[in-house]
Amino acid sequence: MAVGYFASPIGLLEVRGDRDEVTSIRFVARAEEAADTAADAVHICLRQLEEYFQGKRTAFLVPLKRTGTPFQRQVWSRVETVPFGRTAVYRDIAASLGRAGAVRAVGSANGQNRFAIVIPCHRIIGSDGSLRGYAWELWRKEWLLDHERRVTGSFLS
Image (cartoon, rainbow, N blue to C red; front, side):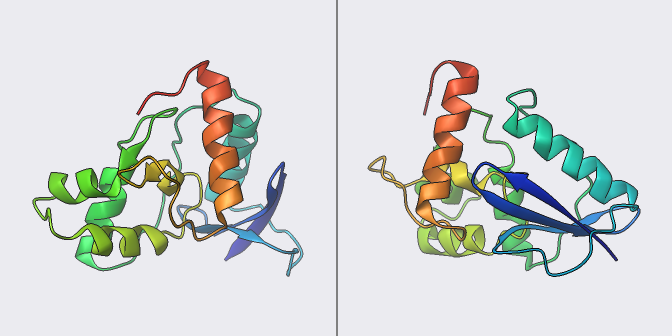
């Protein structure tokens, strides 16, 4: 298992994975291990994160090793379809999965996302337009949405 770190404007990102897949991307307080970015997937991810923060990348092409319940994987797949610079609401994600009453379950699944930024759970907001829940703190969610707005020149819901 390889690990690499990226010092983003909003904190240190840790990327774990192997030659073929990334297993997690998360914000951490400090590097816990010596970086070993020899794994292809980790190296690709680190480069794409750098491009994202530079405003040069709006979509990720990173192989992810997804683990979770079938419902969680459905939610994450749907979240991935929310375009750069746009937002969606929890209620609409639930409805798109044929489970209109599962708004809280969608929020919970979104909170279990292990791939910060790449699976853009920061783009999911409350139906009233408010920023709700973000595993890596709401100020980061706000920053990411502002960053995408700056890159696209607008912010559409």
